[in-house]
Length: 228
Image (cartoon, rainbow, N blue to C red):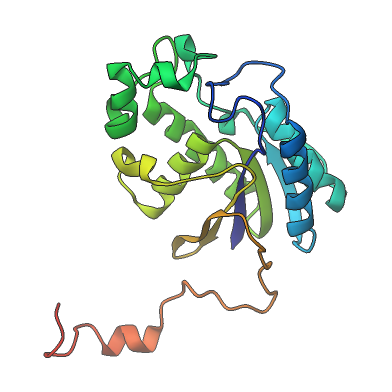
């Protein structure tokens, strides 16, 4: 059983203003550094086994704040890097919001491609492939992965079976934690966009996702007075 923490990078000067994408040199600002330090405090009691990060500076800097508390290296993982926005890279969000293509990104992302960049569903495919490989490499324990909002939302949507065209309904804030547990019975979303105190899993905690064999065998149908 693998517990995976998908963590969005902390705040930088481009957040909510422009699409940074793969622009080099986008670092955490003062608020972001404070968020990263607070995140390190929140996760100090977690038994992290490995830490992975998008190659982009804002993600690496957030990861390093947590890694320093655990004495772990940060391994770069391109598969969880930011969307490749192509011609939209660096543009202001308020200007992009006027484009008809922007509405497609918001409401039918399965059919959207950034001009000169990735298709939206390609982002989901490569992120899920990267995360599935981590589950295979770490069949037990807790793995932290530092990434970006759309990448985390797309991955979370996949693992909970949410249609991709609805993934924009999920919210992932800077320095938030989305916790997915991979069990023999499938992935389970335990937290989404968590920015509060977060207790680590107990070593003797039973897998809540496991079905009750007795109840499954004796309650195949609901009682007659209950809706089906």
